[in-house]
Image (cartoon, rainbow, N blue to C red; front, side, top):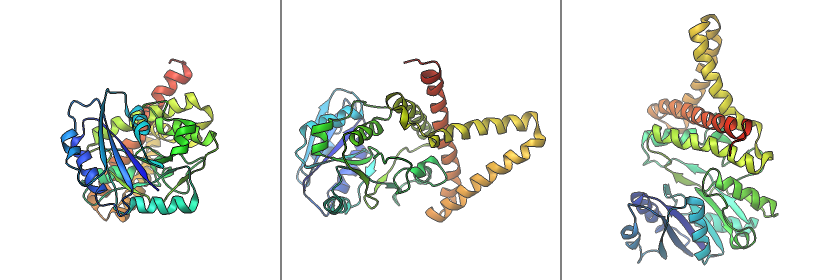
Amino acid sequence: MFFSIIIPLYNRPQEIDELLTTLTKQTYTQFEVLVIEDGSVNDAKAIVDKYANTLDVKYFFKPNEGQGFSRNYGFERAKGDYFVVFDSDCLIPEDYLEIVKDYLYEHKLDAYGGPDAAHQSFTPVQKAISYAMTSPFTTGGIRGNKKHIGQFHPRSFNMGVSREVWEKVGGFILTRLGEDIEYSIRIHEHGFKIGLIPAARVFHKRRTSFSQFYKQLHFFGRARINIYKHFPSELKLIHFFPAAFTCGVIFTVLINIFYWPLAFICNFVMLVYFMLIFFHSWQVNKSLKVAFLSIIAAFIQLTAYGLGFIQDFIKRVVFKQQ
């Protein structure tokens, strides 16, 4: 089995350097790497060229169109039996391709996704963000595990599709705003088999600050409404949880200002919820600092997503704006 690894890149030369370093350590070596520079001002050609003797790597520069269409650009030029997509801010364990190859031979998946985790080298903020995006106490917990709700939709930081999927389904038709979910829904609709490979994890850096994390999750909330506009049946009750949480936070603030006798109940519920997050993160990360930061990260994850969701729900669903 030959893999083509597709990596869209936009103004992140340091990240691609770290990712390519991890790929040089893969125990399974039947793969090529295609780096698609998406109109970056700060390009990474010199960095990618450093790996010419240690990897089968190709560098392409194209006008900026977004990550979805950049992946298509890579698909069109890939030689592999299977196309693997990573985000540039990922680190890949050395046995990743070995795990994927063995699993695909045994289970015959047409497309797959894998979970993400925090690497020991990550900063405390990055570890807290990773926790928020994978915790059972946030909506992150429904991604990348066997107990997901409804159909499993691989996420583009760690996913793969067979050449047959590319030839019959095509590539991404959205370049942003939920493009990976939309793509996996079409793969399902064509009758292909999609599954989770639990052991095929990557270390996903995500954002390095809470302000960047807020912007990313606000975008994700808007993306869910974009998916709904294409596939109305894909809007599930669980997707309203961050919006409900956000409304609950606003209600709690108001009740503390205008009717404090009722505030005790609301404050107690919030306290219990955040204490659960604190102690679970402490158990997972073995760090009091990361546990405290996880409360902040979880709060941002839910409220940023909730506000983005509410914004576009009102704009695009209630008022039917395009």
